[in-house]
Length: 107
Image 1 (cartoon, rainbow, N blue to C red):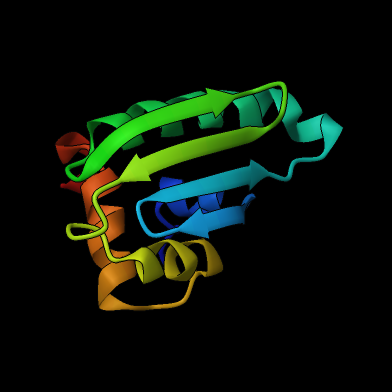
Image 2 (image 1 turned 30 degrees about the horizontal axis):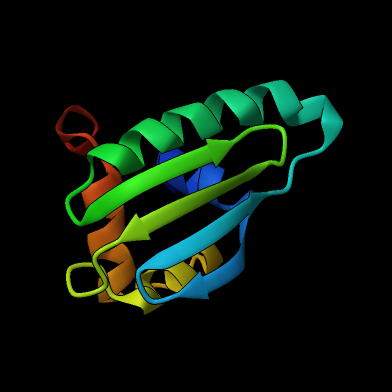
């Protein structure tokens, strides 16, 4: 069995707080003992998402443990977010994961 994608380990800590097509608010659920690592991963996630095709803006609020992503719903199907966070295999979730993965990590 291979290690899961590093981003998948992080998104398992996220939940959808609010979602309308084109805008999603994600909440970070991390125990206080894991908080420093989760915050570092959240910063990295924010950078990755900002650079992904179809993403308009990202606002990471570390104090609130939340992130708002505005995206082009024509390029990123809204269902992709829920599938990715739930770990549900789908073409849309796979495409979103590939879009969020820098080329150096995709190889």
